[in-house]
Length: 101
Picture 1 (tube, one colour):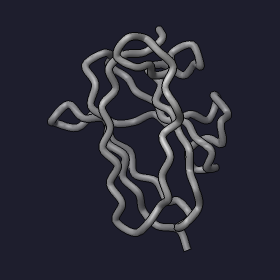
Picture 2: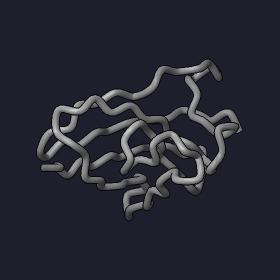
Picture 3: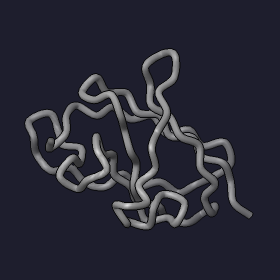
């Protein structure tokens, strides 16, 4: 049975944010299926998805629905995928410094 996972991202670098990952509910790495995140009243981007518990899920954050807009490190360097193992009530908090585009 799937569990609800909330992902929150803090960034000032964009007005839209997408998430894409290995799980079908995160787009299965298909850029056309990237998930648009919502901005809350505190300026955080959030999304809540049902994911399979115990499954290893990898994901990236995008400023546009394009691989050219993938998140980068503080100095513009490539960063590794975020990796989570979904469990009931999991909240993932991230900060993204910049994007490729």
